[in-house]
Image 1 (cartoon, helix red, strand yellow):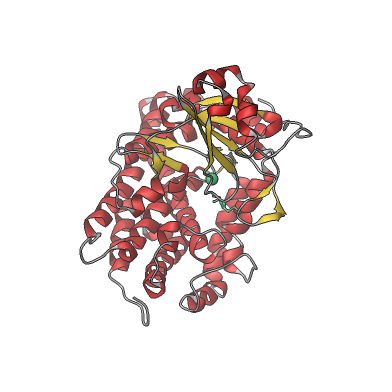
Image 2 (tube, protein in one colour):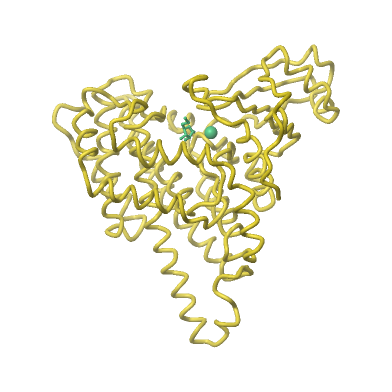
Length: 431
Ligand code: SR1
Ligand code: MG
């Protein structure tokens, strides 16, 4: 593994006109598309915050091309961002494919100097967040995302890897500092201070935003989480594991976009999934109509939230029992029956700590999507501003509670019960 990012001297941002020529020079890609480059249909479809994404279709098939831009797309050229994020994304995709090849898109080609990756075209998958806004159910999701997290987190941790190998992998991702800095600022810092990037539903949320900025307990809790994010390289993280980083059909789940990958605390990825399910849960009230109520769908979202954690914990524990080949908890120390029993208790208590971390990170991710720069369309697409503010207030109130009192929520069911109770709350002037 190398941490040396490519040379970008010949980089040029592609557009719909230039891309076919470029791809035409790649024999395997040209064969996959079929016909002549001039006949390929190219659409730029990127709707994320950072990159260009093209869908290219020819007579024989299609591909997706993701290219990094030298700046943050959401903001523009005033916010430069290194092209090297494509290098880290590629490294992460390759690593993930070793453990869960069926849950990530196949990499068909990587062009280091152009910061682009050609990927299998996922059809008829859609971004799961968009599907959830339409109340589409994803019966495979809990199983799949639980396996994705358990496999990628366990197998890149000290529970599975020898120390020297683990350190080499940490080093390989060390240079992804600009992407980590986005997380450090936008998730753990700015929502709790006056910052030009922040925005929220105003004036309805002005009061709660000010309250959070003055809330010492909350700021200490989020700072503890930030320290963990900065200083706990437990495993290779996806780094941005929200429902916009999942392409799904009811039958299949694919995790995309690991450009924020680095070695960090496991709870960060798990918390991202829990947070985005909870945010969607609270947003449903804003999408419901008398003709199409969403209560049943909300039940599905919370049942899925419970399953995600439970299936993750079961899969992670089973890997730990069967594949503990790392330098942590050395096997010779735990050969006798009594030590083995204690080790099993230790595993359970480790999972309890991990759950607590995950709740804190989930809370931080809920708050940043409502008070920080980058919001979720689950909530943003609620047109009635007062209704949106009500959904957001419920999410913020639950998040504050989870972040400050994580220890009071020992099981995932206590969290979903609290979400249900919060969903019944009304707040003066909202709704
Ligand atoms: C400036 S980038 C904002 C957000 O977009 C990505 O999806 C990450 O979540 C990042 O924090
Ligand atoms: Mg992304």
